[in-house]
Image 1 (cartoon, rainbow, N blue to C red):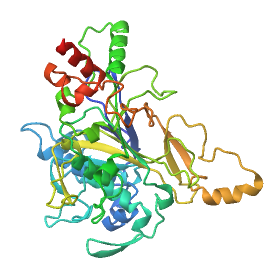
Image 2: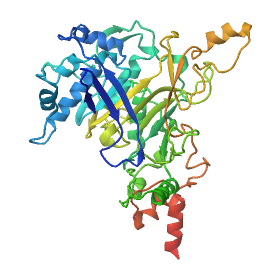
Image 3: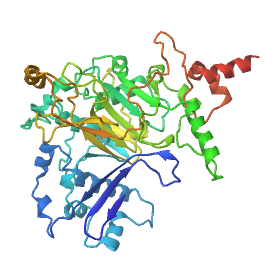
Length: 464
């Protein structure tokens, strides 16, 4: 949503909410951007190469303008286009690219991540914001965009060859190697669980989100990577309780809709290695939400596990993304495999329009700018919560990369560390039944559904 203020500023809102009656937990990010001077010189002076090097959200305007342009190209006939709206109600707009020139989007506090339909090359075959033959700019999308951001902010990118050119990143990395660990968890919390996910597809996706998608890094087993994934999903009982509360306290006679989608057939068409990574959606305690509602937010995050670097064990995050993108191939992209067992083309096919904001922790040893994102609530202003004696203070701070970082607690309404649907790793049966919005009598008694309590009960009833 774009709110144009009479003062001349613009409010940008990225939200997971749909244009429906709200009975769900959603998330929104909001930032106000001031108007540039008449000629827009504040932003025009920043070269594209400089924006690429900074990698701090300064390219926000480019991503937003491209997203609106791609939506315009896909709009139905006779619909009002974004540029028509700008000309009619805001004024002084010739093309959509003028939008980024008129506001100080270079001061964005997040990285904007967009997804548009089509087949798009990734970061190894096309440089972000590279000028194309038709004078347009190449934009990286979805997980490809996230992978590029995280790679540029990591320590390994200090000096490297990129697209045949030697590139030197002089700034300190936001994510030093000693902050990350191969044991870090990849948290996926969504409201639509797409069907036909295979281990191969998820493995490719995890590589991009976890920064392990470099050529030559594909010799690992995809199963090992998938074991770092936690797919957080509500149970049938949880959703039934919410429905009962609504029926008890609401005078609204409309049919109650959860806006959460996973069918029993889709569940059966997913690899066991994927559903075995499912974790139970549990409300955080304390919770930022005053009442229990259907989860409708979509969250992707890297949960830090490196305790040797001095970090406080808990819910510290290397990065977290609030997005409209669910866990489907249309939103996350589909990679076509080559002949090699673990090698993929550097391109993805998307079929959805999605938009999200990426929050990245910053650990450069600079107290004024260092920050660590965490989940709600925060009980301290920095990560150094354990008191130390005077003679231990210096050595402790030298070893603790989080010591002077400001903690920014995000109002994440669910537990980042939650119980597994399969608590016994030696058993395949689920202790709870995942929520299904549609259930067929044929599928609930067979396949993976038969491992759930509801499926087992249905199968027993059918056999009598």
